[in-house]
Length: 293
Length: 342
Image 1: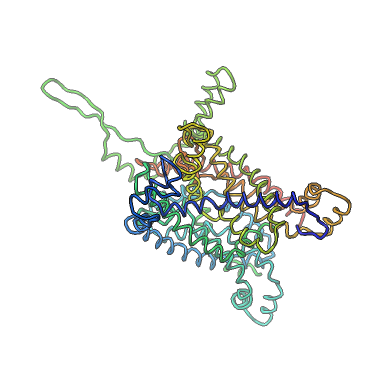
Image 2: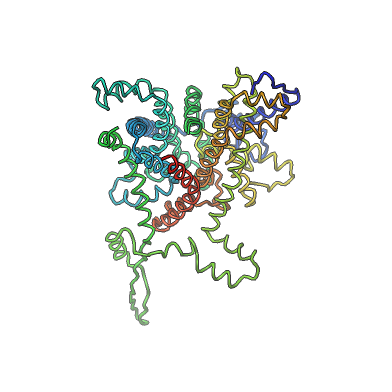
């Protein structure tokens, strides 16, 4: 807090800076280390002999003749069929984000403009749904999906992820819609617009920041999901996260572990870029729900 | 908004939630009362010159016909709930009779799969949630005191652990902490114990997963607290400074009361999230010594031979009851507020 009256002692300032540096190291170093290690061979990154090999690249030099190698990446993407997993992830993410935003904006707009009591109960129900562990829902899906023979394919997973995502999207967009003054759409209604027209032409244009935030969170949910995608998709249709898990295997097999390392880096990098770009929206999304109510 | 318009606006999202959140919960409830079929056995008489022997073999054909006819399994009532893998009523009463001391009784009970998982889940919640609140708050205070110009990148660095999926986050840490990783190897050197490793002890595994939990969830608490700190009014703080309040007193009596509602919100959300801890167990390959309720369900669902729908569903229902207990105070409070507001 930078208050004019607030004088900080130098000791406090030093302590504060040290703390932040230590915390940032704890928060970021694992990612930097994994990124660094993904360009080494397994004997270096997971060295039994000497952990310093990971830096001096002793075995990488022996095996490949260079300090760095992109062998793990090329193998994981071709032989490990990571390209297929990333294609599936893109399909799932694009559809989940667009469908959940479409459903979510409609529903949240209605909730924010309704004065009836059921709107309150719907929000509470959504909160309870939000609390359900995904794995308990999955245990409810599996049997009916097997019986209906819709298990294992991408569309099922997309619909399920959209539904799981709705409670959070509703709450988030609801608090955004609440900040848009009612008079705006009321005046449109008086001018003869239907509710849908008011929603489409008056409210949506001023709602873009909220929609982007909600979209980012849907994206992160769909992109990061493990529970649903691992259990509802067959091998062929696996997205990135379950694919990474399948590289781990039960016995940590020679090549596959480095595939997992490079796959982790490949999967994380786009996400980091995205968050770096949209940092403001992510933070505003996390806080609207909390600070405003 | 008229009811009819509301209905049409809300229909798509409502339908999605009812079909894929409401119905599955009911489906889980129904499944929990069924158990998979026993295999049908038949007696086969084998005769050879030395006489006849009767052996019992599995009648594959009849079993598969029965499975096709009644895919849900046989009705089991509350049988699954009280069997050894869940509430284990019978075993517990046996332990109660057999064991001499209370400590030993608790020891026996926490070796049963369900109670073992429950114990881990609760321990995890109990250690992670308060520490997440504390660490998040300290980081928020600390970052808030840093010059505005460099805050952006610092915030980005801080939220990294939160935005990666738990599986990836735990893997990234596991690769460092494992015996062959940078931290694990150095710990072995420092402790002069070449056999020291994550998997060697249950306590170590639990501590690692709890540390992972704090690492993963603190950024969320940080972000919310940081935003709340921006809304703290300056006048009372300045007045307190003039009155000679120490830094600690200012935080304790002005800042904390102001952000109190946010603290309860963060506590609730992280409690809910921590209760479903599951992916780190897979990431750390810690199945041997740490199992959570969600992991038990997962394990039943990926069973190699036959998927244990009934068993998974029973655990799911009990997890839902657990969530309900956690949520109850909040729901009751909201309802009271709502009633007084009317």
